Length: 341
Ligand SMILES: Cc1cc2nc3c(=O)[nH]c(=O)nc-3n(C[C@H](O)[C@H](O)[C@H](O)COP(=O)(O)OP(=O)(O)OC[C@H]3O[C@@H](n4cnc5c(N)ncnc54)[C@H](O)[C@@H]3O)c2cc1C
Image 1 (cartoon, protein in one colour):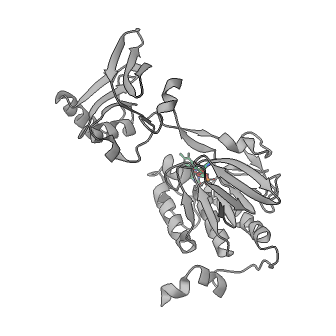
Image 2: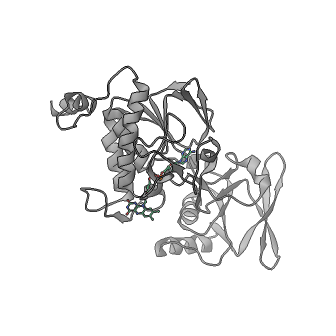
Image 3: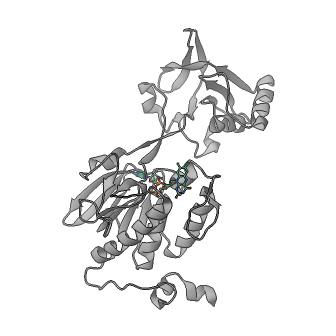
């Protein structure tokens, strides 16, 4: 059981800045995100696109923004739990118990939900039988390519991820690339390389096919593909990778007894608390009259929620409003004096 002043659900820009605001107020935070890295929509949906409305930054892209936010919260040494989805939220005598799908548990007086439009989840293959192989022989992302050497791999998808992994893994494994359309979406360099590997017999390509069924014993043995005309083909595989993009699901957040209005959580704009004491919602996931789904709104919301978190985490201390420019206490927390020495 991990004890902390606040659990932050979501490592998007709002969740990251919430770490900063909690840290400035002397509070610790644990951050949980379903994705394998920080940045939320900025990293997952538009890492290279320029953003023009972050105050005092005329232009930066999603990746740069995330990098800077991570740099800014370094002094507070936040603990990140990636690839974990918060599944359960329960109250125990005024304290919240937060559980993830990986079995981690946290106790805290404050939960800040910065879950954006919900957790990002991979779009999955349409065969129920594949579920039991997930994480063993069936993957929707690659976390360790070393484990994918000397395999017979079917890669599904027609975009950058499918193509890049087909090229990369063909160095050590037998690859069949399967796409339900005729055209692949990739850079001309990637498409050229794919054609070359196809000619050399290093990658087999099956277009206009989709998965129909699998042959399994203890392990995955082969898959049956079918095209629109009902033509079937069997492919020997021991591993399946599928890259069909991500969907955003409100997921478990909808089951925690919070008021929900059109997939968002109504909050009190004084402190961004939800209908449950000690549970706050900030960023894209919250709603109130006039709400703008912008990064800058999330920053403001996180600042106000962190003050309310302080009052719950330190009920015997008085909250002091302080400027970072002049507060020695905050500067110490930021390690500013150490940096100057
Ligand atoms: C194409 C595009 C362009 C944009 N351009 C701009 C712009 O120019 N300016 C601007 O201000 N805004 C822009 N936005 C909007 C901006 O990206 C969002 O307002 C911002 O990302 C919201 O941040 P957030 O931290 O609230 O949520 P998100 O960035 O959505 O992050 C939420 C995180 O929470 C995680 N999560 C959710 N539920 C769970 C759970 N149960 N367990 C674990 N993790 C969970 C998700 O995996 C995700 O990583 C743009 C959005 C898009 C899609």
